[in-house]
Length: 618
Image (tube, rainbow, N blue to C red; front, side, top):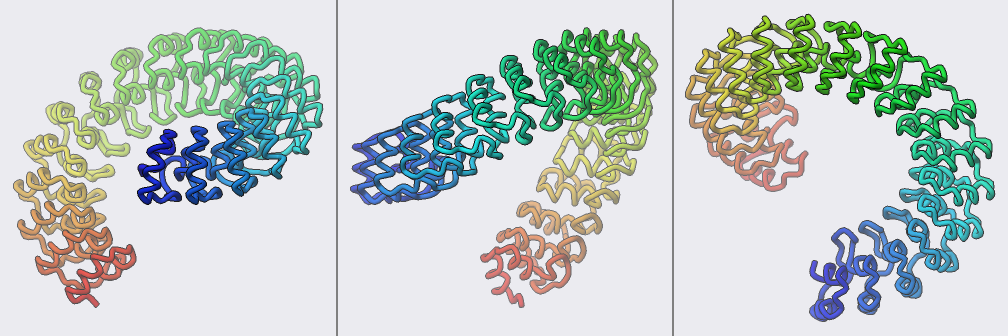
């Protein structure tokens, strides 16, 4: 796109040469859609005129700003915008990030361009774009003169839409006090709902804009209005640690225990951010230290997640229940453990935290610390009496959690404390399968040396060998085979290790398994057999390897019925040819699509369709 880039850089001579050489002036492409819009972004008036003289479509759609007029307006290029309007640009064209040219000019505070667009018939209340309308766009940037111009032109001060919901919330969020006053004087509804922050007061509070918040309260803002990301203004101010705004809201009657929003309540919001003074202010105002709700369940868990030891102590001194259940991590100790917050974890244990409490994503604190490889926290928890074989959580137990992530030292530590190397449960069934999934050879060896059953069944992949095979972990596969893994063991998503390796196209693993005696025609699993698994992924070399090892090219079964249908559905022409050359029945029936021809046709693979027809498909 030489013309596009020449226009973008304002290279008039180069642009002229390219046009004379026959470059398409309306060619589409690039971030800004076409050469005209590219030239406009940089305000290159001479290039713009040149392109227009050569027939550039002034209303062509496309690119970041959708049309040329919006591109000129966002940069405040008044003369260029006038040139476009004179050339017939649609002043109300919709599209692009800002929705229309008027909103684009307004967000940048380009007063003269705004006036020009309005005089040209721009709809002052047009909806669309990121800010919803021009008034909200002007308000978010604090462009007082532009906002006044729009209001004088009939802008609806209470129009809804856009990221901030309305103009008042936009101005409040950014702390533009004079614009806020202007909008209120123009009749803005101080309690209008909508937008990311729910209302203007919450928007002002989250930014710590004390004067704006006072202006809104004086204008009748409901201090306890619900809605928005933070639920209410008090939670918003608390989350960001704005102590003076918090005090102002409380003085105005804010409910210190109001529920809602991402953090559930103001105390939890302050705690997760480590805002100790705000937390004290809220507690002094009667905040319930054990209130439940929100992402972290309670304030203590929130403080623990953020490693805020002083806040945690403040909450405990105020009567926080150290063993309260709920939230993403189940309890405060698990929250501290997963983040490696040793001092907080010790503070909680000293305060009587139950080291074996169950719940949350990781089931218990030991599994949480083990999953992340936090050796010191693991040691601390074990010394405090953590049950090394406790079941539950996503990983089933601590050993499986550590094994999946390859945390060898933690694995050794857990085994030394009596972890059951063959414990069943969790996503991967057992620790050895978990280590195999992650390709952690040293951990796998450690587990095998500790007596792990190499052929244990269960988990997503059925057994450790299949788990290692599906991800192509060659060294782990060899380690497992050397330890006596049954190469033809059945089970799991892919039925057997060979099918698992084949679906991923892992040639070396496939060869290793075949050399170890894998049954090339074993049936089972989602794809029925290894050949179908390799074919669906278009793994030509693996397909050839399997055929050379005696794979039945017409074996039936699996989701696609046979290998040829599997190759056809993916449009893998070379694999389909290899299968046909090996004697695949082109009209074999069965599988999801009925036959190979229907599969290729349904997915629009024209070349495969032709090949199948030439091979006698009907």
